[in-house]
Length: 305
Image (cartoon, rainbow, N blue to C red; front, side, top):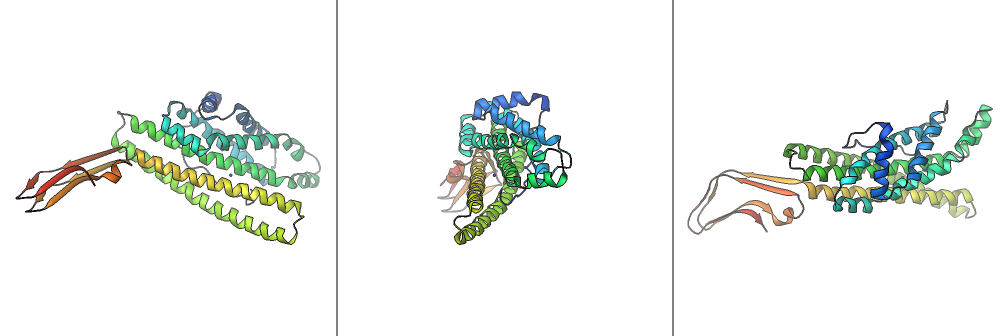
C-alpha cells in the first residue's frame, strides 16, 4: 500500500531466496496454503516482463520494474509456510497476506492491459503526455506491491522463527540471534510505515479541503478514494507489525541466572520468572547457585506471582 508515491525497500527476509526457475513451486504452495491465486502471480510476472523491455522508462515505470522484481523474489520465501503450524497459519490469515498479494495482482492485471499502449514508441512528447495521464495508476500499483512485500516479510519471518523455535537441533544462541534480527526488521518496517501513514493522512486532509470548494471535482473525488485506500493499507500493515511482535514474544526464551542465595531470619527470596511473563514466552530457564536459609526464612525457585 499512491498519492504520495512513497518508496519502501523491503527488510531482509529470514529465508534464502531460491533460484528463479523454481518460482512456480513456491507460489503454488503459497496459493494452496494462504489463498494467493495463480492469476495474481502471473499478472505480477507479466508486469515485470513488460517493463523490463521499456527503454528510457519514466520514473514511475522504473519503480514498477524495481517493485515487481523485489516482490517476485520475496514470494519465493512463502514456501516456508507449507510446513507452518496452525498458529502461524492463523497469523497469515489475520495479516491479510492473500488479500494483499491478490490486490496487487489485480492492479498489475489492469496495468498490463494498458502499459504497451501508454509507453509505445513514437513522438517523444506525445508518448510522455500519454503516460503522464496514467502515472497515478502506476504509482498506486507500486504502492500495493510495496504493501504486499511488507506483509509477506512479516508472515515469512513469523513462520521461520516458529519452525526454528520448534527445532531441537537449533542452538539457543542461534534462536536468540534470529529473534533479534526479526525484531530489528519489524522496527524498521514500523518506522517506514509510520512515515507513510503521516503522509497519507496529510494528503487526505489536503484533498478534503480542496473538495470543500468544489464538490463536483471528479479528479479530487477519485484522489480522496485512493488516499483513503492508501491510509487503510498503511493501518493494516501497522497492525500486522503489532501482530508479528506478539508472535515474537510467544517464541522468545527467558534465561535467569542467580548466584548464591541467602535468606536471613523471617525473610523470603524468589528466584525465577513472574507468572505474567511465563504465559508470553516459549521457554523459561532458571539457574541458581547454593541456597541457604535461617530461622523462619524461605527461598523459592521457579514461577512466582
